Length: 249
Image 1: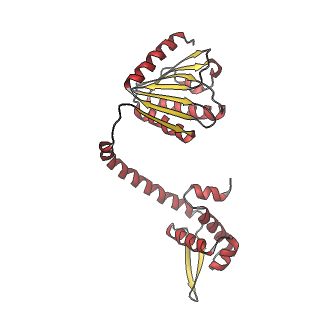
Image 2: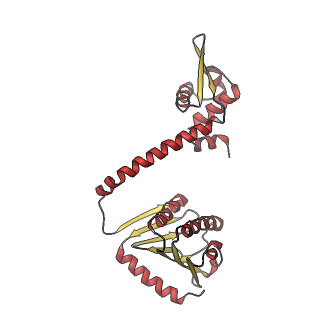
């Protein structure tokens, strides 16, 4: 991975990352050499330097009425991250305070259906699942498979099931026979996770909990259909019970 990408991931723009790395290389310098070395337009250099100063990553001194800029030592990037963390925690608390108001403003539909895509979408919906269920609650799953990206699927569900186990959430899972033994985490928690298998291969995985159904297509870029409807959930649960009786251990 390029260093510029890492700096972008922690909150710098591409131009800011280039300028910071160029300053490390040049040492204390005027804008002229910085523009030449970074190959950025002068306006972008001036804007980038101003933002880097605001972030505490660049300082300057004035000699003969000319500013000379210096990148702070690299370990100060950790201070930058700590400050971001403090701001995020503050913002998190502010959001918590206004959630009741926002929920009161939300129009509730009888049936709520949403579509999520990609692995970030997977993270979101499975976090919603874990946050909704409490210790002793049950999640029903059938059609569990290896997916198109077997390694990513395995890593994702190993982590997910570990977090489910920590909360004491129970699961009944019907795997496609071809996915037998794919997620070893199941075997570590027999008191929580009951597993059976079916020869029939299903195209999607279905989760059912409380009044919610989650249909997951485990393609390389997953698609998740999230449905909140009590009657629909009850009908899927009845179908699960039939499949559970047909499934083998």
